[in-house]
Picture 1 (spheres, rainbow, N blue to C red):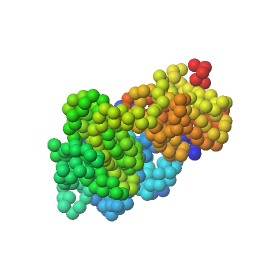
Picture 2 (picture 1 turned 30 degrees about the vertical axis):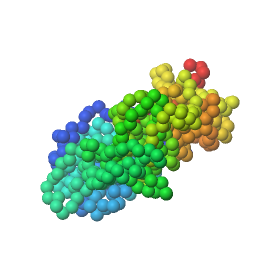
Picture 3 (picture 1 turned 90 degrees about the vertical axis):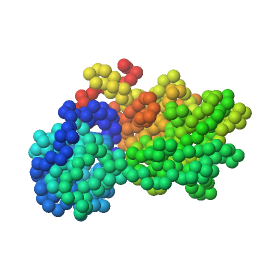
Picture 4 (picture 1 turned 135 degrees about the horizontal axis):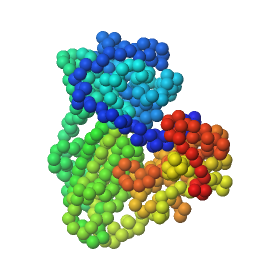
Length: 484
C-alpha cells in the first residue's frame, strides 16, 4: 500500500477544518441563475465545454472536489453508478478546486477511483469567480437551459439520494427551470401493517406486549415477515438514505426488570443504525452486521414507552440490506438477573489508549508547533504488529469502531479478542518504507476518543511520512512519546 494511501485518514482528520473554506456559498442566490460557459482540459487531453455538453445532455452535474477529501472519495462511486444508468441524459464532471492538486494528481486519481467521466482542474475555468466554494465536495446541477437548478454543499448520502436529485431535472415534461432547496424526499409509500400482526411477529413466546406503528404516520413501518424459519419485524426503510422506521411498545417495569430482545441486520457501519429509546431518551445503538443477537435493556420501575427505530443515514449498497427485531419480552426479577449475569464482560480502564505489545516497538507522537496533536505512530521492525486497546466504562464497545485501513477490515470493538489487558489485535506489518494506518474511534452517536496511528518499519522513514503532511500544508515534527 502506498504511503499516501496509508496516511490518508490521518491527513483527512487534520484537514477537517480545511474542508470548510472561508467564504460561504450563497446557494439561494445562485440557484435559478445561468451558469457561465467554460472549457477545461480533462486527464485524457480532451477539451470539455459546458455549452456543448448541454446540446447533448439534459443535465450536467459539476463536482468541485479535492483529491484528499474523504467524502468526495465516498461519493464518486455513487455518481459513477448513476451516470452509467442515465448516460444518454446526464453528464458528470469532476473538477478539483484545491490549489494543491495538479493534472498528474488528477490522472492518478481518476485511475485509482476507476471513474469514466471527465476529471480535471477548476483553475482557469472561472467557476470559482462565479460561485464561492466553501466545502468539498460542492455539486452544482445545471439544467438543459444552462441554469443552476440545485447546489449540494457536501457529499450526497448515497447513490439513491443522488439519483432522486438527478431525476428531478430529466424527462420530456421538464419545460422550464426547476430549483430545489434540498434533496427530494423519498415518498413513504409502504403501508403500515396491522398492529396485531406486528405484535405477533415481535413478541417472544409467552409474551403479550402490544406494539404500535409510528403514531405520527411519518416514518416507515417495521414489516412482519418470516425469514429462515424465524418471524420478526423488518425495517421498511433499509437501504434508503435519510429515512427512518419506527415501532413502539408500553411496558410496566418493576424493580430489577429487564427488556429482552433479539436484533439482526446487514448494513454498513454508520450507514444504518438500529436504536432503542426509553421515554424519548436513547439507550442503545446497534451498528454493522449482526446475526441474531440477544440484547438486554435494564429498566427503572414504572411505566415506559420503548421505541425501536432504524435510521438509514446513507444509502446502503450491501446485498439485501436489512434490520430486524424479534423475541421481545419483559424479564422480571430472577430471570432478569440470570440473563444479565450471562452477558459477556468487557474490559474497562481509567483511560482510553493504545499499548504496543511488541518488545522492540516504540510509540511516537506527531507535533504541531511543538504541541502534541494526539496522533501516534509506532516504529516496529517485526513482521507482525501486536497491540491492545483499553477503553473507559462510558465507551460502548458495540458502537466503537476499529479499522485497519491497509486491509479494509472494520470491526466493532467488542468483536476483538478481549482479556484483562484490553482488546487485542494482531496484524501483518507493512513492507519496509511504507506505513499502515489504524484507528479506533467512537462513532458520531457516542462521545469518546479517537486514536490514529501509523505503523512504520524504519525510523528513518518518519521523515518521508512528515513530507506527505507538508504536501497537504501541515508542517509537523515528531518525538517519541516517552520522551515528551
